[in-house]
Structure formats: C-alpha cells, structure tokens
Image (cartoon, rainbow, N blue to C red):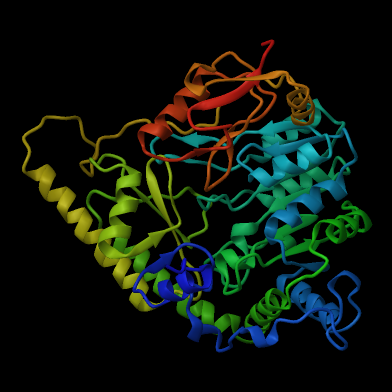
Length: 484
C-alpha cells in the first residue's frame, strides 16, 4: 500500500471544513490574495530575477518598498522565518562574551543566539497576573534599573507583543536603552499588522527600536516561513547584521517565499486601509459579542493587541486543553494553542465572516453547557460578581540563579558532566536542558540555572493541564550537572 505523501495529506486537508484560528495569517484563504503560487514559478537565481544575497535589481527594490510600507530605514526579506532575523540581529549587535539584557518570556531563538555568541544573559521578568493567567509587559523602570546596575550590558531584547498579545512601552524603553548608547532589539513577530489601523498599536519601527523582526506569516497573508528584519537609527551594527543574514539564510532562497512577501507588501501598499477597515469592524463586533459569555471569558491587559482572542476557562470545570480539544473535535476549529488557563485564537485580515461566526457560535454553545451544568448543582462556593471562582493561576516565570552561562553548559555536557534524573526530582540541581511549552517557546528553565521548587511546580501544573513540556532530554527526565 502506497504511503500517503505530505502533499497528498495537505491537499486532502484543504478540502475539509476545518477552520484555522492559528498562523499563518493568510488562513488558507486562497481567494483573498487573488494570486496562486504553483510550481511553475519556483525558480532559482536566474537572469533577470536578482540574488537576495547581492540584491541590485527587483529584490532590492522589493525590500526598499517593504521598508517604506513598514516605516523602516532598511528592510531585509527573511525566508527562514523570524528565527533567522532574531539570530542575525542579536549576533550582529553583540560581540562574543558580551552581556545582554533579555525579556525572560522571549522566544527560544533568542536563547539560541545567546548560546551561539557565548553571551551572558541578564533577565527582565514580566509581571504575572494570577487572575487573568497571563504575563504582563516589561516595564521601562525595570530596564532602567538593570542598565544602571550593569552598564556593561551591550544590547537589550524585548518581545512586543507577546504571544498572548501584551504590548510593551517600546518608545519609553527605547529612550532608556539609547541613553546608554546601545541598541534595542524588538521581537515584533506577532505584530506585523501593527501601524496599519488605529485599532492596533503603533509599530516598533516608529517608536525608536533599532532592530525589529516581523513574521508576516503570523498575522498577515504571507506564506509560512516568511518574515522581515528592519534596521533603524545609529546604534545597530548594520554591516554585521547583514553579514549574519548572509551566513544564516539559505543560499538558495525560495522565490515562492519572496514572491509571497512582495505580494503581501504590495497588498498593504495598495489596499491596507480597505482591508483593515473590514477586518477591524468584524473583529470589534466579535469581541463585543464574546463579552456576553457567562462562564468562558476574554482576557486582556491594559496595553494589548486586540487581534488576539485569549479565551479563559478560569472558574469553569474545563481545562484549557479540554476546551482546545472540544473546539477541534466537535466544531472543527483549530486554535493556535492551549496554555495554562486559556486557549488562544489568532485572527488576521484574511479571516472571513463565516469563520468568526463559527467561533462565536461554538463558544456560546460550550458556554451555555457550562452554565446549565453549574445551575443544576447546589454547591456553595465563594463567587465573584460574574459567578466565577477567583483563584490564583500558576504561570509566573520563576526567578532562578544562573550558575553557568548557556554556552559553558553545552561544553560541560559534551565533556560528560551531565546525568539524567526525573524532572520532578530536579529542584536544587543545575539544569543542562531547557524546559518550556511550545507554543509559545518561552523557557521555564534555561541551561545553567539552579532549578527551583517553583519551576518544578509550574511544570507539574502544565502536566496536569495535559500541556506538552518540551526541551527536556526525554519524557519525564532532565539533564543536570553531575556535581551540583
């Protein structure tokens, strides 16, 4: 029997009625862009089509247009996703062994850059709201305090918006960082749609960030693995960033990917006002409708990206994993992720009215079931004004002492200085592994840190919620330093 190939499986999935509330931002809506990307246009660097690594023709002009549309001084196409932009930005702005100040809830690619350049990380921790169940923003004052305490820090990296949609004060942080003469790198992968409509925050390019990375495929109609890196101002080392882009990007960049990037930029240049007006009206109507949910509820912080729908199960009998599975199995709605106390639905300009209606209908049906079940019980409990039990939800990223740099840990591991133990028994030991949920890919444990009871308890909570823990060496075990 012939094994089903990936193309056949993808084609078969395309014909189902599954609807995606997840990236990529084009939502498999083939009619939206009005173009097709078949094998017939899959070429290499042939005459007349330029070379991404030495662009002086159509690709040079395409990147210039992207810079103008996104308000950057200089923009580069990325065909290896935002990951290659983050790696190149950090490696280009630091020297081996430098100190770097990093938001602890950054994507794992930031930690990979720290390893590759042998950097010494210092961490900024977002506040955690135990009632909402999500981390807040990085505070400008925390950045100021860290830089004042360690003025030899050579670069600062933050994520805004976060995976959950929380937005930082990029302008204020940039002013602080520049006062120390160093660059601010902003992972704005989830904010590619910023700046195109007042309903959403301003983009980091216009707020003083020196290096900004946008994943167009996450929240705009572009193919998976397509992204942009923008450079602004005088603090980023442009030549070194370009050098690392040449080193880390494929020497055979996909023309289909680059065509998708350029087509998306063209759409934004010509029709951004039109498509964002339609999108915002639909999204605002959906959010207002969902505010009427009685048991499930939308959560957000004060500074927030309203394109993200964070649907909390706090105070209900459902876990986030159970809600995620129910939406998928019963309603054929694929969410972006399930986290500690919520599921995340990502929206974009390519979402349809039908898709929004299906999500709304499903959530209200589930919500009504939860409400009726509770009304039939006679259990006394302390309740809030909306009838939900208010409880503190675990999720605060634990603060742990760094014993070794991530680079030193890998060298020690290669020298046989590690052993495997059950992660539930690892408190007090020095980790030689990451441990994180993916998505979003923000580490609970980083190699070289002494593991705390709080970290083990948080991982145990994730396990009880049936959320997959990744990064550790194998199921149930973690690598730790033999001698401590």
